[in-house]
Image (cartoon, rainbow, N blue to C red; front, side, top):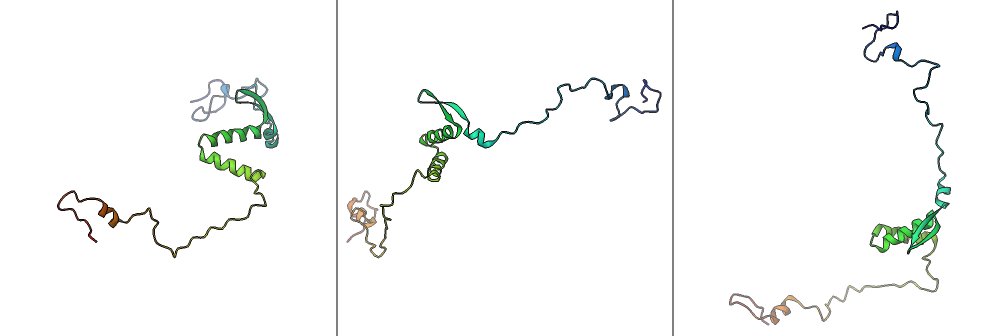
Length: 144
C-alpha cells in the first residue's frame, strides 16, 4: 500500500506509518509538559534529622524522624512483636543505654553432673505404680 499524500515510493505497512502522521520538526510537541529535567534526590541525613508531628498519649509532639521511629519500635515491642523487641535492645546497646555497671562481678554457674540422684519431689515409675491400686485383675503392679 502506498502513501496517498506524497509522490514518493514510500510503502505504508507494519512499523511504517503514513508520513502525514509522523513527527514533524518545528511543530507543536506531542508532549508539551515534557520529561522532568531531573528529580531532586533527598539526602538521607536530612530526612532522618527532619522533624514530624507525632501523637503520643493524645498529645501532638514535634519529634525528629529518628525519635519517632524509636517510639514506634518501642510500642511494637510492648505489643509483643519479637523482632521489634530485638531491634529495640540492639539500638539500646548501640547507643550505650544498656551499659553494665563496673561494680557487678561476673556470676559463674557450675553444674555438678556427678550427683545424679533425683530430687525428693521426683518419683520413679515404680513408686507411682505402688501408690495406685490395681483397677482390674489383669493389671500388673510391681511388688517389693
